[in-house]
Length: 378
Image (tube, rainbow, N blue to C red):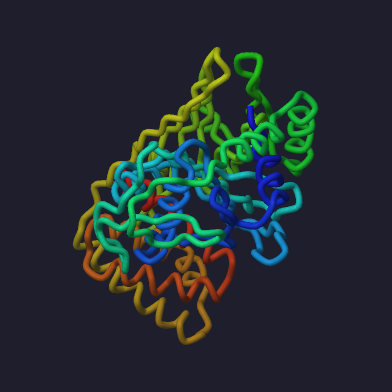
């Protein structure tokens, strides 16, 4: 079993970017340009390494390899993006790797790419890249390749050595459990559960009882054996359950209009552990649009523009407006899902305003984007 934190360190220590390894400070999958560049790198790494894994490490300064981290990114449907644009599609896994020195919520993104043993090709246009294009790695660059992909450098021995160097052991597992517990103090309930006498899952959160059911907020869940952060949320309510073979995470989001808020099921994630030392993750979207009046939403969005204008012009907000600004992104997300005109543009405008206004406000935007990604890819 590979300890992904060790693997990241081994990749960064091995040498600079090459035909099986790329590093990025950040990746932006919000717009077509960002998606296109990500697809280009995945395609190039897959085509350059048909017989072994390739990797992209995200959250690393390019010049000196400093690990600065990125926001937790729980897009379990990233394979859907790959399948939509590349044929044959390589298998792509995005994992969040915690490092002790990073701030809360920050991780290193590790993208693992496994080729389908055939050259991947763009199957439709995206940004400036045209249908039918192929890419390969030339040193640290991902470049278009117009000739037939044939003889390639064999990296299998080097990649296997790096992966073997990152194998987990009992000491690393115990150290990981202790590190997790020590990091989650101050009222957070840190717990662990062992599955199949091999896998150790740790989780923590603020616990509360609602009608006999235990819910958690500020939830952090890690698979210690692989040093992978499985789930992280500062706001949402989470229900955790488990059996002998499964660890189940059910996430709820708070939505409302006109001051009436309630929690709605968003997604269920099942982590299933097998006797042979393997595990797999299955996610199911539970979210259904509330039965709200579309005219009311249209009115609320138009009314909110007055508040947005005050924020934009730096005017003093009263107590009610201070509270309402934290609900703007949620309102625009709901309007977008109900196909209210200009909701997408309103959400983009608020992104720019909130990013410069405060970290807490900008977090409300990022939370809505996480929900929209889940719904879109389903």
